[in-house]
Image (cartoon, rainbow, N blue to C red; front, side):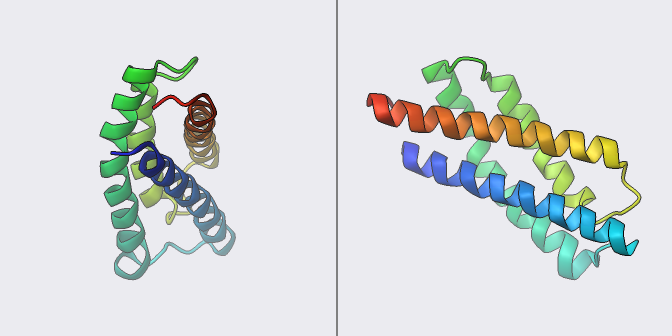
Length: 126
């Protein structure tokens, strides 16, 4: 996979993370769960599809490039967390503190990876 493809997948996951955050707070405000077949499943499926492409490539990239303060285990945890929040985003009874913590953790890792991919571009690395 080309580095620009990894960048695009990472950016897409970052956008899904923001969408999950918005969905969660909308569901909490209304107190209503999202409809499983029209909202939850379609969103979770597109997140999973992207995550499944992203995770192995992001792990390989971090092993090969050894970016500072970004490790393969963080990539794996982020992949698990984003899949989990993609579903929990539609359930207002989910813990606000835990949900926000997962969102922030996902955002941190994805932002770090995007920064590192941009940095390696400017230095001509793969």
